Length: 77
Image (cartoon, rainbow, N blue to C red; front, side, top):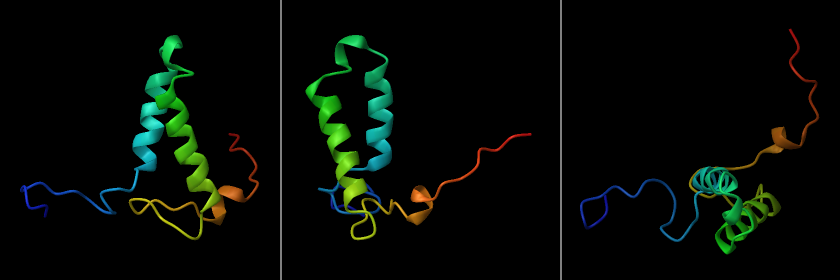
C-alpha cells in the first residue's frame, strides 16, 4: 500500500500501463482532432516499445508472449 493510503497496483510507478494506453487510444480515435495528437503518438510509441521489448520486460504484469506472433485460423462457425 502506498504511504498516502492508496494501492498503486502491480508494477513500478514510472511504468506505463499498456491496457490504459489502449483505452486512451480508442478514446482519442473517436475525436478526429485528437487522432494525430501528441498524446496519441506517445501512447502508440509506448505500445510499440512494449512490443519491441516483449520477452525481456513486463509493464504492470502485462507481457506479450509468443502466442501473439503465432498465425491462427479465424474462428468460423
